[in-house]
Length: 115
Image (tube, rainbow, N blue to C red; front, side):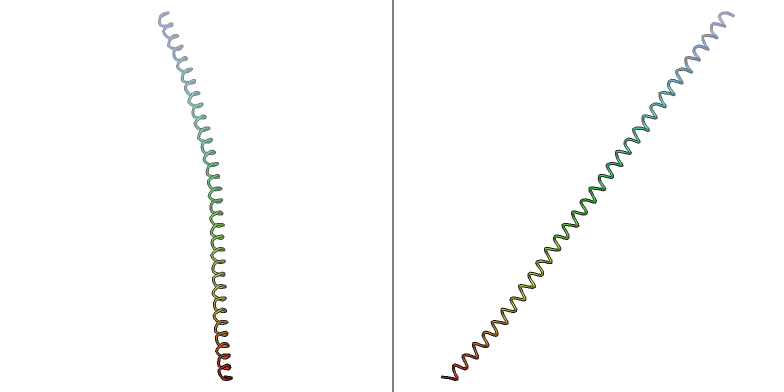
């Protein structure tokens, strides 16, 4: 009986040690899960910050692109206006040359009539 009692006590002690190890393993698993969750949250926050930076950069690039397009359009408009002005002046010069040629012709006719 004593031997049986000792075996029983040894068995109970082994069971207590196993339960203690099981608790320790469960605590370690819970700790690892918390660490994993914290890492996931930290990574998600980091990704969110990167997404915000990317959106800001995209907005900045879009604004720069729109500004460049406005500059180009303004320059093209200035070129168009300058070309219209050049053509208008060219027509004025041609008109004045025609008037001058007409007056010169009239003066030559008068001079010829006087002779």
